[in-house]
Length: 265
Image 1: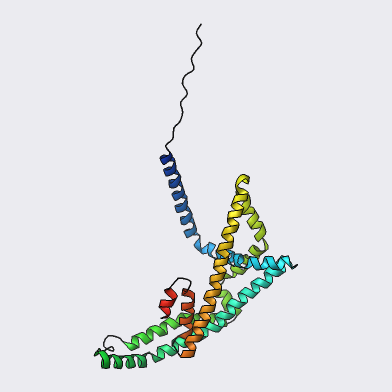
Image 2: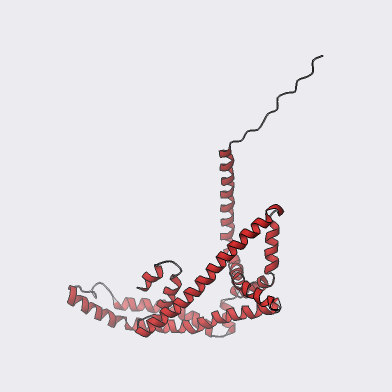
């Protein structure tokens, strides 16, 4: 009796192009869904992301303090209060100065327009005052100073006014404190998500990324701060109107190559 023949086995052949196309389509779908979720939760996530950024910037300093024997809770408290105190102090000093300079510039606009119009009339026979309304420009600058004045009054009006206006942002230091306390555990949990066979490689890559990104962010923050101070002081010395607002703006824009220089010019 002849042995029974087995039916031929079917092999499933997949086109690499189709597999790649399906993979990228799935990635695109997840990106769109993620973007939609983040957009809907932006108001809720904003304080958390801000606190995470502060904790990321302060964690290397905290690690050095812990290595020297300081407790993590005490080090996080000192760093956070120092950081927030510096930011609030700078804003309290600079905002009134900026408001005063905007007001002075707005009051001086008619005279400046008159002088410029006379110079253009003499040199190029061009009547600037018929094309530019100095009173409207002065009113516009006065309106621009309004929000800054309101912020300054709130900031200088007492703790209760600050609590009333910036209630949701008070969560930022709280979240930042707990992020600083649990940063090693957070990093450890993120690494545990990666499969064990890939964990060492991913950890090395994340370490390299962290070193490059953190160095760039801290370097840019130091450079822009120094340049903003230098620009503001230099403009103030030579008598440029709006020295502090222009100096701070140019210093902040130096993070983009050539843009800060052109705006300052």
